[in-house]
Length: 103
Image 1 (cartoon, one colour):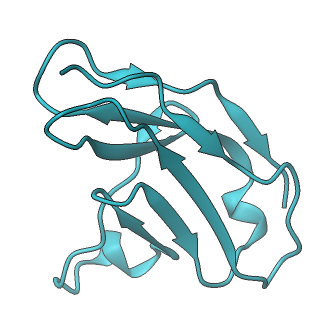
Image 2 (cartoon, helix red, strand yellow; image 1 turned 30 degrees about the vertical axis):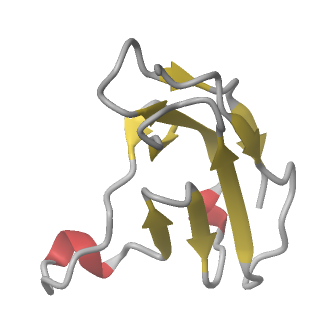
């Protein structure tokens, strides 16, 4: 079964230095969907075990299975427009509407 349009929870504002969790969920897809978060239209990277310079400034943990995007300490740089996409390899992937988070 192709995924339904996911429901995204994005706080509209957050205080610098706080823990912020964004969530994304859809329940119709079978097999269960994997979730990809985007910021300002750019796919966010999953943090990997490599100590590359690019990963060094990643301040979040993205869980593709549960659809959560967790910022341990949110910064002004994290302000932007977020949305997520659910896909399970069947039919078209589905995106939720874009929501702006202001830090």
